[in-house]
Length: 223
Image 1 (cartoon, rainbow, N blue to C red):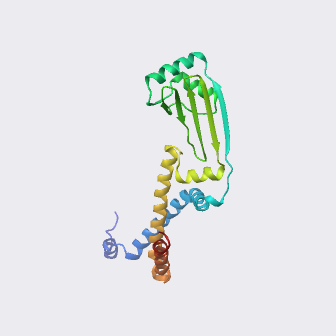
Image 2 (cartoon, helix red, strand yellow; image 1 turned 120 degrees about the horizontal axis):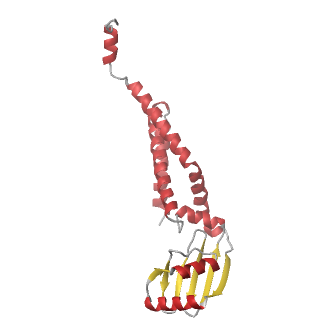
């Protein structure tokens, strides 16, 4: 038969957690969130830092666009289908019919299935913007098809990925998640510095300088 707990043990059980113990628990938790968010942000932060520099000096970084132009003629059956569809849907913005889309993707290096085309009585025009370049496809009711693609190089591609320009929904979600991870990284870093500020007198002056510097520069030099 076990003996009842001693008075000292009962007393220890009722003592609340010491402030220092709670502080240690919070610091461990903050450090865990901080390193996890930094690990998630590492590659993307490097990418966005480099492209921030290239975007800031875009006019000084020369890129010679490479333009590819291709032409083809529609088979007679598809030409008749396009002419009928164009006459019935002038001024509409609708994807190419399945048969026309299949032919276009077999004939040109373009993915047009599901992309909206601008229709007139004379033709269908599909804009195909993409990161680092541009492209378009025009198919006329007379059966003539033209495709043009412009490639502005990998630096332009990285710059457009930085801005999420024409990069698609999945990349847009990634940027949102990355932004959230950066917020966690910054907030946990600030709280960790706050806990250590008593032993590091320069903490608050440095934080204050980091806050004031961009504000002062914007007020004085950005008009």
